[in-house]
Image 1 (cartoon, rainbow, N blue to C red):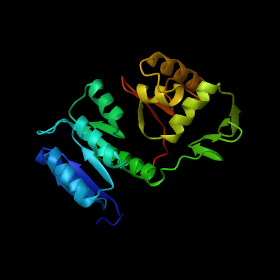
Image 2 (tube, rainbow, N blue to C red; image 1 turned 90 degrees about the vertical axis):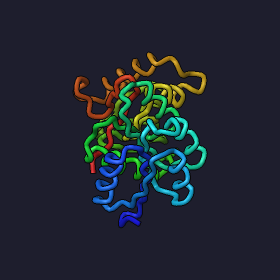
Image 3 (cartoon, rainbow, N blue to C red; image 1 turned 180 degrees about the vertical axis):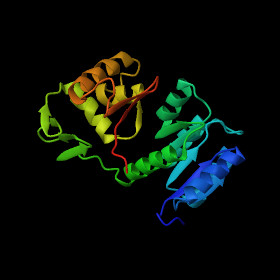
Image 4 (tube, helix red, strand yellow; image 1 turned 90 degrees about the horizontal axis):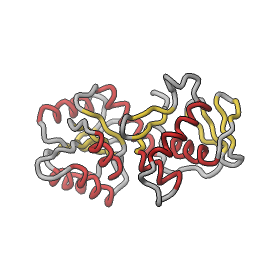
Length: 233
């Protein structure tokens, strides 16, 4: 077991990439289990109960998106996708199925480790506060008074802007698809009105960002959704 206490299951059919991931993770003190197929991944998941999964979508015996759905029926552990699929639809389907994040091959090990740390931190603190102060970076929300401040200065938000920002803060560091943001902010009856999200994100940026052309807080994941800034380690 890793010194950090975190055990990572890699489900990846490419041996060189699997070896690269194992060496990178073990070098940071993580424990590692490896599987080359979806079936072996499910078996190891049930046997070892890992803390997080790194998953390739293009597995030889099954589509990775379907595997995500099965895993989500069993546990809420972090799932990070690493895939050669650069298509936006593949990313969206994986995230909507329950993945927490994705990286498109080739990727840097530093970025992978940073994403993994964020996902593990979020999993370790699953309870979402419904009162008190919620803060990420320089932005804070008073959930009792519904006041929002940036570097201590109060900014006025409309009800929809407030709810959208709340969803982003509660999922800081995680990619949120347009569909997820619509459902969480407007309700289950919304899923295709992506222009709502774009309009309100622009409004939030005007109120929260010092420079909208180089946003610090709200980052666009092109064609997929948005990710809210999380302070680096």
